[in-house]
Structures are given as C-alpha cells and as structure tokens.
Amino acid sequence: MRSNSIALFFPKVSFRNDLSRKVTITIGILLAFAFLLPVCAFAQSKKELEEKRKKIIRDIQATERMIKKTAKTKEAAYDRFLALQSQIESREALIRNLQEEIEAAEDGIVRNQVVIASLNNDVAKMREEYGRTVRGAFRRKTLSNPILYLLSAESLNQAFRRWLFLRKYDERRSEQAEAIRLTQEMLAKKTAGLEETRLEKENLLQSIQGQKSTLTNELTEKDLMLKDLSKDESRLKTDLEKKQATHEALNNAIEGVIQEEVRKRVEEARSRPKPAAPKPETPEKATSSPTASKPEKARPAVAEVKPRAEEDNMSFNFRKNKGRLPWPVESGFISRGFGTQKHPTLKNIEITNNGVDIRTEEGATVRCVADGRVAGIQFVPGHDYTVIVQHGDYYTVYTNLASSSLSKGDELKARQNIGQVSTNNITGSSELHFELWQQKERLNPTLWIKK
Image 1 (cartoon, rainbow, N blue to C red):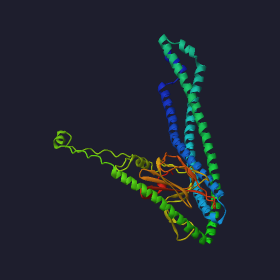
Image 2 (cartoon, helix red, strand yellow):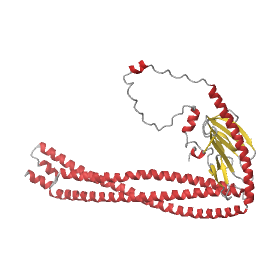
Image 3 (tube, rainbow, N blue to C red):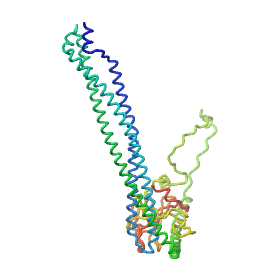
Image 4 (cartoon, rainbow, N blue to C red):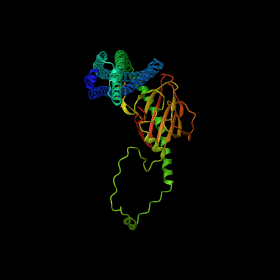
C-alpha cells in the first residue's frame, strides 16, 4: 500500500534523472557563456578601432583648418599641395579603419547569431522539460493530495522524508522557471545587440561611401594643383634655392652650438678623476671558496633598457623613451620627412631634410619633448628663433619659433612650453622644424616620438 501511494503521487520520478536534466541545462548555459568570451575581445578591438577613427577624424579636421587658412596665391600653392597630400593620406587611413570596423562588426554579427541559436536551443529544451513537469504535477494533483500523501506515512520519519521530497520537487520547478526567465532575458539582450551591430554596420557603410566620394574630389584637386605647379616650375626652383640657402645657414648655426657643447662634455669627462680599478683577488681567496671552480650560470636576458657605462642618467632616461616621446606640438602632421627624398612636384630634384617639418595650427605652443637644459638660442633669418635643448648626449632642435622667453642654461621639464610657432606672412602656413641629434649624428625624429 505504501509503494502504491508513492507511485500514485510521484509515478516514475527519480532524483538521478532530475540531476541529469539539471546538469544538461547547466552545461547548455555554460556553453552560451563560452560563446560570449570572444565577444569581450571583439568589444575591446571595437573600442580601439573607434579611438583610432576619432583620432584620424581630428587630424583631418585640423588639416582642413590649415588648408583654409593657407592663402590662395601662387606662393602658397606648394604649401597647399603638401597639406592636401597629407589630407589624402589621412582620408585613405580613415577608409581603411572604417573597413576594419565593418569587418569587426560582421564578425560580431556572426558571433551573436551563434549565441542566439544556442540560447534558443536551451530555451526550447527547458520549456519542454518544464512543460512535462507541470503536466505531471497537474495529473498528480487530480489523483491525490499532498496532505494525504504526508498523513499516509507509517512513521514520523517517513513523513519527514516525504516532506523533504515535496520541497525538493517544488525547488526544482522554481529553478527551471528561473532558468527559463534568465535565458530569455539574455536572448533578448543579444537580439538587441545584434540589431545594434547591424545598424552600426549600415552607418559605417554609408560613412565609407561618403569618405570615398570626398577622397575622389581631393585626388582630382591634387592633380589640378600638380599641373599648375608644373607650369610654374621656374619659380619653384628659385624658391627652392632660396630655402636651401636659409637651411644651410640654419644647419651651420645648429652644428656650431652642438659641436661646442660636445667639446665641453668631452673636456669635462677627461678632467674627471678615473675610478680606481678593483684589486685582483688573491689565489688563496680564490681557492678557498667551494664554488670558485664551478662556472657561473648564465642569467636570463632582461628586456628592459640598461644604462651604458659611458652615458649619464639624462642620456639614459632620454634613450629609454625612444618611440614614446611626446610630439613637440599638440596637433599637426609631418609635411616633410627625414632624410633625402624626391621633390613632390619638381622632377629629378632631391631635397635633404635634417629633421621633420610639422604643419600645425597658427600660434601653436611648442613643447619640450623631455627633461633637459637649453644649450643655445639662435635667430636665423627665414627661420626666426631656434631653441636647442640638451638631454645628456642627445639634443633636440625647435626651429621656426615666433618668440621664446628662454635663456641659455635654463632647466626644462618634459612638455614645458618653449615658445609659439611662427606663421609665414605670405603663405599663411604655420610649420615647426624639429631635429634630433646624438652628439654630432643626426637621428630620425619619427622613430623617437609617439606615432
């Protein structure tokens, strides 16, 4: 009679089957979260692409302002051509970045679709099992009564076990209902995220089409300007000769200051007393050590930059920041790179640049890129003021300054103001000439400042 009453209220109910179903559903939910892990990496990559896009757009906007301020005269045509060329490069970089964002958005859509399919499958399984549980519970209530089931127990201990059984069964049903609710909420969020990603992709596609159209117009304008500059080749050659003469005067002034500072440092190094050499170890002490005959184990290589024996702290601090130095101006673009290069408009003519030329905003503040000391200030006609800052064995040069309140010997901190960049009265362009030296050797500044 006892077994029949139990079978009447809970026919073919097994805790083992109940646990198996619970594990199956839990595994399904864990699989769904496993699909979500790559989505976190996608979100990080998406943020990086967005930040890169914003920076490129800021550069394009700054270049557009510089182009508008450049006078539309024959004398300014070359400067406008360089600015437009930089604008085209930035526009092409923006298009590439947008294409990468579209690819990332498409990958996100695929991942979301996989997660949604997995969640839909879990919901279907949980609903099916929950339905069977509810239907079974309804049939059992029509056939018996839980109170009678408890009262029909033969002992108090058996009644207590039956009560525990009923409570576990109710908890199981509540867990199923809660699991279905949570999974449905997750499914709704992923579906909304999928729609948002699709909308973002459509906006990016429209943006890239607009950028391509603008790029086509800029390329056409560049070709027209190049033809106009080709017609005015004789004037450009004359202007180039004048600029080369002023550059030569600038180079002589810079070299004179740096060579004098290098000479002083060499003399100071020679006048310093040499440190006493360590005394050699006696054979008795060498043999007394039990580990003297054993070869020393090789230490693992350390990635950090170590100071050289011959360099001071300032030289070491400057060298270890290679590739991380701040820009000497807040915003701008490199209009002429370092080294020997072909002239952008004149055929068979090469120009040499000892540093980089940075086109920037009118009246932009020029900043020191690292801690140092003012080694010299020169005024060169055609280049206005030049400030040379010493950083141990390294020197940074800032040319085309409208003014500077510094004096020789002043101590400077990184990002400290040096002066304001000057503006060409004829062309309307504002350009900083920036050089980097190691003693008497010229270095490429683009390898030292942040990208």
